Length: 272
Image (cartoon, rainbow, N blue to C red; front, side):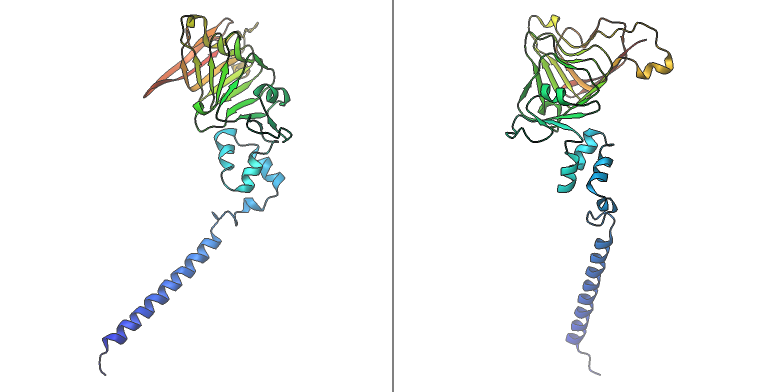
């Protein structure tokens, strides 16, 4: 038999094309049966009410915030007014449920346990807003600088806390007085920036003031429920000192980390 190189080449090409087609079929089959595919994921077989209930157990930042980026359906459920209220001055139609033009109106309408998401961009003016129920205030920006609360001169504080609350991913500025006034409850400040304006009277200002005063000695096992201020990964600038206490709470467990252009603080203020 005569050896034909062209015939061998054609047979080889045909085999390669058949193998390539086989690999593509296998790849499509694996992709369609992959559990990571959003369309085939078992969690998407749940109804909206059940899925929203699951989202309600996630920490607002970053977990619940990140779920809103998965798909349109998850965005609608993760941002539903049942899970958190929103402060957004750019929204024209204030009849939209769960949306408020100011932090004060959102706090007034909130229920214990609610989370208020404050829109990034622009400046939110706040003065002596009393918070008497356990809620969480969260900045909607990627960084604390993206969401700024400013307390005007003449006010005692931007926010006054009389219940257990949490602040996260926010910048709070005060010209005089203090940024945050803690009177009662457990106040958690996580990943924020607290700034007192530098001026000749900056010795009169203080980023955090706590006047909480316990009339009785708290047992060691009950301290986790006592009054206190708990600061983590927060930048503090200006003022006479980072925190001023006039009750019986004291500064404890201080840790400071230098991060390029700023200092990040971790500390607790609670009863000894």
